[in-house]
Amino acid sequence: MNFGSFLWSSRLVSYLAVIFSLIGGVILFIIASYDIYHVGTIVFKFFFAEYSHENFHADVTGDIIGAIDLYLMAIVMLIFSFGIYELFIGEIKNVENEKSSKILEIHSLDQLKDKVAKVIVMVLIVSFFQRVIHLNFTSGIDMLYFAISILALCVGLYFLGKGNNH
View 1 (cartoon, helix red, strand yellow):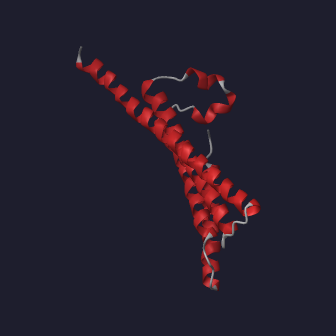
View 2 (tube, rainbow, N blue to C red):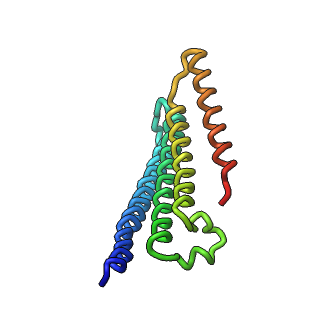
View 3 (spheres, rainbow, N blue to C red):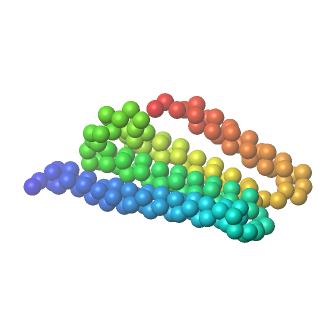
């Protein structure tokens, strides 16, 4: 075996990234689903078992947004796993046959980075809103900062969507 074939075979070490990012994604899906189940039990207790909670609405909303955040991170892990597999190991035959799975088609490293970056930005936005729910605005300057941060997010989303070419 010459060095070139050894070098070519070494790409198979990327199986580790594929397998463990897939496992990480599944774990995040399970944790987020558990969080939603937990919120469901709290809501059930609130309405049917005389459970009282001071910040019920804000806490339930925050927990659900947190679960959405985890689901988005799980999707990042899945996209990364599929992308690494497609780029370094081989083509996934079933992806090209599915019209709904275009997000999982990765043909270049730049395309993988673009897709992962967009989902990461969405994770950051969801995390931002999860934190904002629990803020108490005490002055006009707090409201101004909040409005500026929302404007910055909107401008960022606009430019992210403007570059959407795949």
